[in-house]
Length: 338
Image (tube, rainbow, N blue to C red; front, side, top):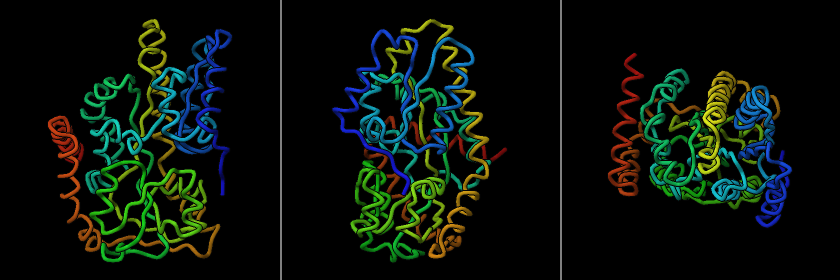
């Protein structure tokens, strides 16, 4: 298993505090949730390249575990210890309920071209979400997709009945728990650093992630049955601490926005074909892996349970969630009509 050392919160805070001295005034810090070479890492290094090529600033990038887990780096970003952070709505859903919209199953299509066009053109993504993040002291730079979600389990699954009594690891996200309840499974929140061991020991029976992350994290080694359910895409968001961002000159703010645009364009090119490449690496590495792609009829059995998750989303988010969901659907309809 590929892994990183996980610092305690105290150690992470001490390290970050040490980096925030006047001697590092021209050094900015960017922490993300993934391993070397993964999608968030690709985004961070493209962002770093643009910043450093067009200014006197340097950018330090911290990968998964180097400053703690996802909740730790978000806490550091909101407190101003980190200037930039990349976090999935899967983790931010607890304090930004509307962001859980990405976990309403079967809302986003599985077609890669449609998804990429949606993120480029969506009013919900590009105009509504920045205001939501701003309410929590964060300047949203980019939301972007990483890959279709794939479930791994201790045996192949083709129906909700076959999920019965299976403990599926979920992020600390109420709506994701609702999704797996609807699918017939038992949602089991677990920190990412414990997932491999949990699968290995049977504490959990499965989990979901994009296929590149299943390959990168070695999850197929202990959870070898891959199930393509078609229920959603993994989405993430790159942000800046808003007090930091607002303290910058107009030129520096534009530098950061340009860097985010450049990183986004590079990353969207990077993910095209990544799923197929990652799946092939998995198949080349293990003879135990099985691949189950649900038929349309099988998907319909899961899709029929999506409305109850959408209803739960609206209950959690109220009027703001209703407006966001309405715009989200309108944006999808517009993209699919083109």
